[in-house]
Amino acid sequence: MKFRGKAVICIGLLAMVTSASAVFAAPADDIKALLDKGDAAAAYTLGKNHPDQLGNPQFDFYFGVAAIDSGRAGEGVLALERYTVNFPDNVNARLELARGYFVMGDDVRAREEFEAILNTKPPAAVAANIERFLDALRSRESTYRTTAGLFVELGYGYDSNVNGGVGSANINLPVFGNVVIGQAGVKTGSNFSWLAIGGQISHPISPGLAVFAGGQLDGKFNSSGEAQQFDQGNIAANGGISYFKDKNFYRLTASRAEVTVDYNRFRTVSSLSGEWLHQIDELQTISPFLQTAQFEYAGNNRVRDAEFHAAGIGYRKAFIDKWQPLLTLSINTGKERNTEGRPDLGREIYGGRAALAITPIPKWALSVGSTYQKSRYDGPDQLLATTRNDNYYAVDAVASYAYTRNLSLRAELLLSKNSSNLELYTYRRDMLTFKIRYDFR
Image (cartoon, helix red, strand yellow):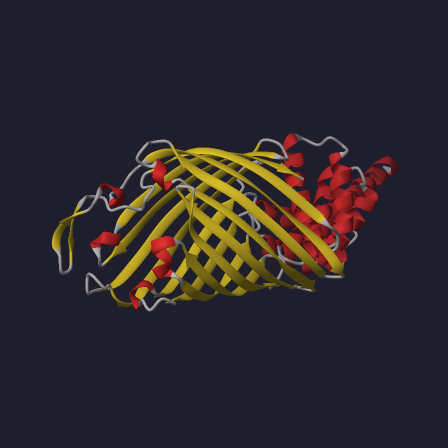
């Protein structure tokens, strides 16, 4: 009987311990289940309702991830630091902690953690993800250390309308009626080669204050004989000053770009722009901007010289998801005022853009976007006695693959259409380009 009584007591104590352990682990399991469903906000709220669980390693781990994913990186870092003290060899915890440091803006500790994980030779998918964070850190470090980069890009593709010409030579115009357009104004398609080289440098001059400069030289070379007269080149340079403090980043940029057609100067653009990036929280940013520019054309096109003023605002939103979605929205307005007494060549512009980028698997990035622009011209065309009114639509898609940290491959698709009340300016243009790029970091 004594043995039986002791057995009953032991079983009772074991049941109590098992029950207490289950209750103790339940909040952590529930948080994990919510994270698995992608509901970080609910997981964080659940964790906050169980402050007594802080210090439980399993709870700290999942609560830390939920806090970071829901925009409370500070709380998440504290929880994960407690966890890694007890389990320093847990790579997943160290990676989440590094991500928390990154979101908080603690670049030094983020880099230390990321590089320590790389030294453990993690799986390729983990290493690729870390390299993306390190690249982002290098970009942010330009605010307090000199950074520089150089790239070379080669490409090949097809352009369905290299000259922006009308689809048919037979069109109808006000005043003139039915007319036949010369071959140079009719849609011409061609394969083309692409070459670009560029670079940039940023140098801090005091905490948060930096100067920067950059430039790019590129060319698009058409293959077919008729299209070669529309070969296009571009040489651009820019420089300016930036200032970063707290959640605000300010940038003032001066730039000059020259476009050539058939190796002759077509247009030069000199511009000055100001931009303010404000970080609403860890996942959202808004960016108002202002720009003023001078358009100077060559030869017979000098009648198109103009002053241009624009303003707009952008919004970026990152989503907590395994595909890392990034939504970008922007709207803009501008005024192009002709300086040669030709109001029919001046216009008001209104437009907007929406784009979504995702990373479905490591090393791969996909994006799709849509652009709209409305152009209302200031006066009637001198020959056609009608005021031009255009609507431009475009859809684009990009797929990129990071073969190595320095070498990447891209496929770019652009489908565009310009509709106008003057048939002379209505056209369709589609481009598909494959590019290979090497970045010297």
